[in-house]
Length: 356
Image (cartoon, rainbow, N blue to C red; front, side):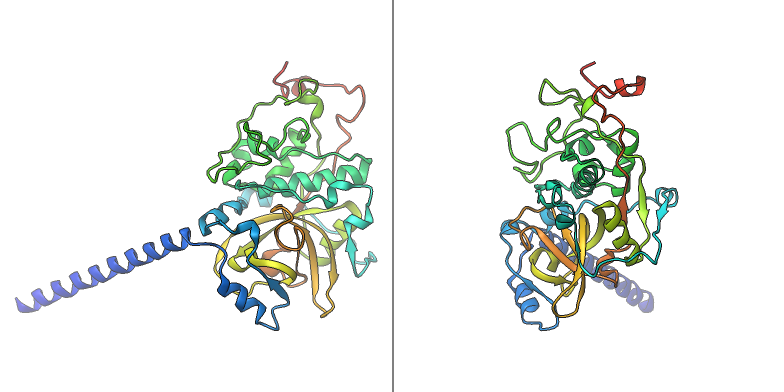
């Protein structure tokens, strides 16, 4: 009898210990979620490390952000297996001669969009920004058109096929949307809310915009503002292929894993050094090079405004798949559809315009 009693006590004790551990873990997680993303200790650890290869700072862009708010910006969701398997993978000839250093801003100086740094606000819309920015650049490179395409169109109108709007989405789905639905210009559907804030995110809980399918300017028609792509594809993760794609066709959208230390990036060639995993982020890759210290890097444009990083840009180690930067590269080819002065429309086009 005494043995049974002792066994019951031991089981009860084990259950109580387990519950306390779970509660403590949940409490720590809650505290972490509400703590500040910027930490002096992280800056000190990076800047005192002679082998880090990059500099950190208490970045003003995130001075009032919690870990939870920062995580919300990282809006790349894992691509469904079926979508990955059905997406073509592009490779380029290995004998293509590529420069040791390349910057799309200087390669195509007539294309102002390549050097434009945007701001996604508090919305987890990075997946949409990386896509519309890259396609805008490619329209200029291929057709000589300086246009800015609308992230708001993607966020509001692509729906569940692209993900959850401000709560994240799939980069390759954005490129598929360009192919079957097209995307309007920023002039038609700007990234603004009703109060005139320059980006969704005046308030931390900014909701996904509603799909209106009508241009804010009455002299513009939704259907006539649509710009399309002819394809949506992934690029083989071999760095040579990625470089060739950018060199031949223009900037691409890339996704990678963000850690706590990345929020503190100021300059240099980033590689993960310290801190927990925060989530997946999408940006625009515009070039590559090698640092004075001999570190190969990718050059990328972020959409956290120019107060973050190196005037809005950052470099990350190239050739080692740092943070998965080479594993998920997507793009598409701009289409001449809808670019004629007097275009012809079919019935499917007409349904795109709410004013008809």
